[in-house]
Every structure is written in structure tokens, then in C-alpha cells.
Image (cartoon, rainbow, N blue to C red):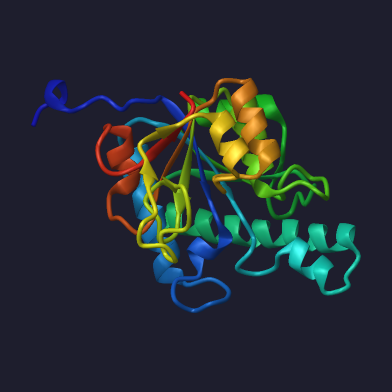
Length: 244
């Protein structure tokens, strides 16, 4: 197939949001290197299509601030620990992407210059223009904000055309959990307001509101489907579009 016959990607710049749990495979905790490598291959395939990619990865496979707070830890301290967990995941993904031949930068909202770059918006945009994958870590740098909110914030700051949400075990947005209810209905498309009104668990409410206010579509797909990420960019596969 020559270049003229190759389908053009739907978007030129996107943000991929995945949970920390996506990196732990079947272990139940921590990082599973083959799983990290598999996701990196998916990202590299989209990168090879000429799409500019930034990423936000949660930290729930290592530490979740809200759960730590529920167990008696002071919330601000627990949230900072969760932010540090996202940096560990970002470094693991950076290593896996570089092993695939993709240039990559980890950019943190909390300064740790020996480990990663500090977040400077114009510098991050320049990295994307130079076709480097940017992984934004440490959330927004503030407690009480989730990595969902960080993803919506960074996607807007980077002028991304969509947020791509990679989910574990589900291939879109359902009216109830399909893993527990056989009659769960999957949406092909749903509005931001319906997601908020029905509490459909796409992202947290502040992230949904930020995406809605800036008319930034969210596309939800299954990370378990090989080629799912590149399929979305070609308009193929199973997914749900929120807004747009």
C-alpha cells in the first residue's frame, strides 16, 4: 500500500490517559514489564502514523491517595505519595517506548530535575512538534486533584484534539458495569451532560466539566484489544465518543 492509500488519522495530536492498574497485568500490584511493553507498542504504532502523542498515567498500581486517606493517612500527604507513584509509572513507560525506538520525555508537575523535566508548557509543545512522546507525571502538582483532571488540563494546554481513555476490561461507556450486569447497554456516543447526570464513570466530574467547557471529545476504548489505539485513529474498532 503506498502512502496515498494509507488512511489518514482522524486527529493530529491526542492525549492518551490510562490507569496505573493498566500496567500491572495479572499481578494485582506494581509493574508488569511485558504489559508495559505491549502498551508501548500500541503507542509506537500510533506515533508511526504521524500523530503527536502525550500521555497521563495514573498511580493506582503503586499507591492511591484517596485509599491511603481512607486508612487514616493525612489526605495531602497521601495525594503527594500518589503523585510520586505516577512518576515511577511514567519512567517505566518512557523506558519501554525508548526500547521501541520512540523518543520520549517525562515531564513532571513537581520538580525533580535529576529524574525528569519540569512542566513548562511551551517546552512541552515544542517536544510534541519535534515528534517526541510527552508523558505528564505528578498530576497537576496539587493534592485533591486526580490524574483524570490532570489529563483534561494537559490536553487543553497542549491543544490536543481528543482525550483517548484506555480502559481495562470494558470497550466503551456503559449505563452500568458490564462485568456485573449482563444487560448493560454500551453507548456509541454520549453527551458530557448525560455522563455527569447519570454518573457514568468515564472520568471524574471536574475532568468531564473541563473537557465539556472546552469542547474536547473523550474517546473510551479497551486497552485489552490489540491495535485498539491505532484503530481509533483510523476510525475503526469499538469505542464510545463522549461529546464531540
